[in-house]
Image 1 (tube, rainbow, N blue to C red):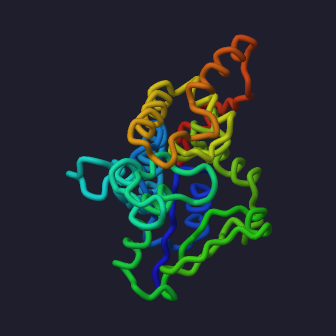
Image 2 (cartoon, rainbow, N blue to C red; image 1 turned 90 degrees about the vertical axis):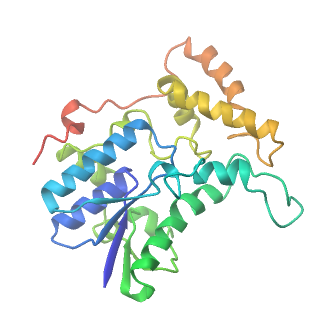
Length: 271
C-alpha cells in the first residue's frame, strides 16, 4: 500500500499533512507541484516546511517539475507552453493559442501543472489505484457540501473531514505550531499568482504588495492580445483597468482588510 499527499503550501493541505503525521500515520510521498509561478514567499515557505518535516518526522517533500518545467533544460515552463506555444488541436478554435487560463471551470493550468504530474508520479510507483491512498486537504464543510475528488490513480481520503476540521481549526493548529504561511497576511487563499479565479481583494493586494508579479500578469495579457489568443484577460476587465480603479480608490485608504500574523506565528521556532 502507498500513501501520498499533495502539499500546495496552503493552510489546509499543510495542516492535514502535519497532523496526519503527528497522529503516527505514515505518508510515503509528500508532493509539491511547482507551477513555476508561485510567489517567492511560497517557495521559501515550502523549503522551511521541508526542513520542519525532516526534523520532526524524518520526511521530505518531493518537488515535482521544479521551476515549473517538465525537464530542467526546457526553454519554457509547462504553463507557458500550454498558454502561448501549443495550439488547440480540435474544434472550431483549432490552431489558435489558448492564452490566459479561463475564469470559469477547470482549465489547462491545473490539469497540466498539478493533476498530470501527480498522476504520472504515482503511476510510476504503483499502477493499481486500489493500492494507493491520496490524502486530500478538503475541510469538513467542503466535503459535507459535496466537494470530492474522483481520481483514476488512487483512492481519495479526507483527513480534515474525518477530524471535523474547518478553517478555524486549521488556522489555530498552524498558529500554535508557529508555521503559518505569511502569504495569508495578504490573501485568503494561496497558490499560483497567475490564477484567474482569485478575488478582487486578492488582485488588489497582489497589485499593492507584489509589483513584479503584477507586471508579469500584465505582460501575459499583452502577449495574449498580440498572439490573438482565445482568452486575453485574467478577469472580465483587463488588469490595466483594475489598476486605474485601485489607484483611484486607494487614495481613500485601504480597499480591503489585511491580516497581521505575528512573527511568532510564522517563525518556525517550535520543535
